[in-house]
Image (cartoon, rainbow, N blue to C red):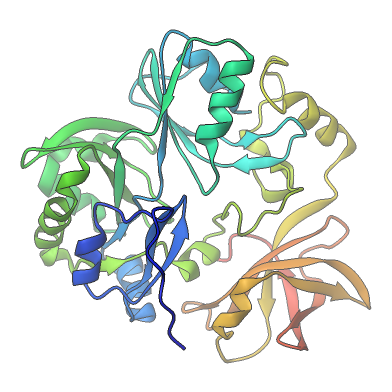
Length: 370
């Protein structure tokens, strides 16, 4: 069945949109009020290209919330439960954001551009509004904006060789989440060692949206020796690798401890950090749920319609939690997914998943799968 997306000012195409259409984009979704490609029609080929070679993704929907001004550093810390006191210019950190109840509301990367300038590279929720409200209530001197910044991801084991051929061998020295400003054929960029896969790679933060097609074509042409091709954040690879999807694997009650983010929560931070007092209480009491993997029985891929909702997980007639995603693993040759489930449930336990009107047998597992 085919559907049409009605044009709307609420949905913004990215600077790479025309290039992805020319590449034969077959499916897309919405993310941060933008259109994001999800498939170019050859899912297994796109998967193995990421695993073995190099793939390029339009992830311009990964918007930046910029904090600039004399109180930018203070606001940057108030917003995240991760300690930013030892933070250098040119460094990025995975930095969960929680509300006052300790509920996870975004899991961005925070990047220190200058002493008085930070970017929050956000997942799919409106942190621009949130940051503005927090800054206003604390009377902080900081300007909050969404700059003209659009990431293009270059992912896979051959990504480093490709990006080094474009920008220079200095990229090989970048640590994970660190970045550097540069230009490529006159195009202003921030190059970061980052990306939503476990296969290694970089994100090229385009600083001039008018040059999206030009940048895409430069990377596409330079990548031919490494078998480059278009792709998107890959569902099969990210679930195999145990990567969290905020909003997909979390609900309105999820705290960081439930989804394996406890190591990014620094409970000794001052009380002015939003959510930190609540997280101390949650940690003391112990979370009620945790995130595990699920290995499902069956030798056929799960139908796409199963991705639209979570599915109940039970054991011995008792509801334990939910399957938050499910995908066919090309490496494991079976369906796998994540469970957000009672802490009483343990890896190795047999369960049943209510899916498509029937109970599917499965086994809980540690994450990551591969």
